[in-house]
Image 1: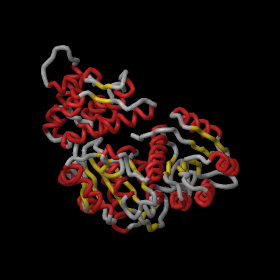
Image 2: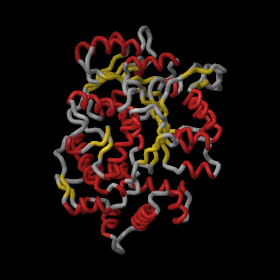
Image 3: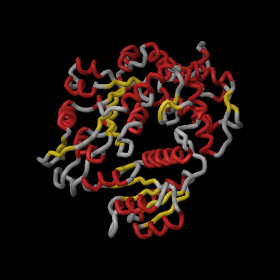
Image 4: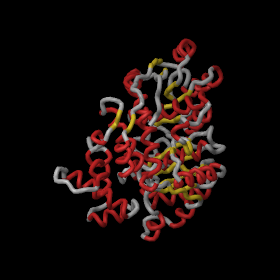
Length: 450
């Protein structure tokens, strides 16, 4: 989560009044000072008068495009970062936008969470750049966003450093919530491609029928609804890095097409017969055992060996218990700063409870727990009674007849996962449920109020 002291000034530029209103409302709700402009000419006037910290601009606008605005900012202002948003860019325009100077490329439609995540990332990097520090010294960063002093994280740090110095394909493995995307970002921003785009793609979150178009783009008329050409993620990442998360969810037919992109460094848009060269470094991630999937015929062996050049295994939180307290303080400090509260302290027993818990949801679960504690705890001291009841009982490890069925079930699931070292397939077998049911139960553990 971002460490946000004083909220920054953001200029939003879009010729759609409805889009301006939605973005203004979303950003203002986070405490940012928001300015809006319906076009580039108005935006340039505001730039001279206010010097915002961040500009969020649409790509396609009448008279002067968002690309022209990006170039104007890069040549006339210092320390103003840019997020480009777009619906259906041309191939050349999408690539030019990120190469000209946009720090993030956000395709429409996007959620409020995706918008704020992009804004937080850009502003975090800007603050670190201005301060001259990579991160607060007390949180012991391994790489950007990755925190820890444990031996397990030291090995990850060394592996990331080596991967950053080469252009080889990297496969990042680890359970859900361990920080695989953070590791991918650390590799990219530590490499010679750091000034080029980093494009994350959740392969499991895109319907199978749309994945090829999203990755490689499509031409006008390629299918019903394709009213104009649209660049794919590979076009956007040209010269930079594409991060394929949950790659194990990709169908066998799609794996064949990805394999060709890896082998020949060429892609073909849906509906076209023209192949285009792309210079894209591929980082992939999975929470499954790809070798096991290969043996079961669920993942192509040739693609597996193409991806399995450099492997970085991100350890689950239970295997780096020494980092739990460090992470808890880091998250607590960040969330308190967002709320304008002084830093919260943990009593020794609360820290012991945090350290003793199994954390089946890994770092993501820890972050969610700390956020709830910061929001809900009165005063500046977090004690054991403030912790979720599940965690208190899990830490005590003793029977009680005052516990709900959900609490008992959640603890048992955590214990099983710990016993099988996070192997969700094996855990589901022991629990007598399928993996989908196990994932749903883990989501409820991580987000009990949802």
